[in-house]
Image (cartoon, rainbow, N blue to C red; front, side, top):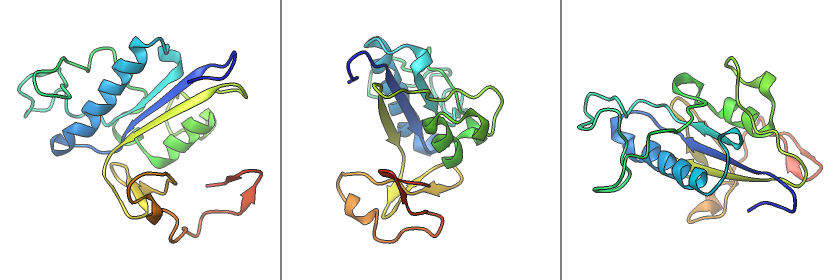
Amino acid sequence: MGGANGKQWVMLVAGSKTWNNYRHQADVCHAYQIVHQNGIPDEQIVVMMYDDIAYNKKNPYPGSIINKPNGPNVYPGVPKDYTGEDVTPGNFLAALRGDSSAVKKTKPKVITSGGKDTIFIYLSDHGGSSRFSFPNSTMVIYMESCRSGSMFTKLPDNVHGKKGNYIKL
């Protein structure tokens, strides 16, 4: 990962909330531990997760998040840049664009990448034909994966025409 002399940026997003969706936040915490252990500094990692499972009353290990049976606690050290009601498609897109003025929170962390930088994005949540879910809303993301062909069958009305080599959302 990373171009010559470029920085490596990471965006980790768990789009769900509640104990029943434990796995999404656990996987994001695990992903954080991996990228952090491989030298990506916290200043270049943005984490979005509702953060309602580590201290959930159903958690038999309060303050811990474990992503596999008998696995380690992957919760310590995870930067919680966007939590609770700040986990939204709008904040996701603004943080990804590096647009701190568009983020709906004080002191937002955003990706301020340059031309030689790379960005790794990991999204963990429910999805379905034509959508990725966030706690209280959904968004459209184009991807290549199983069933990804469903993503562009119908574009929403708020997608504007091409400008350069991207579609403005």
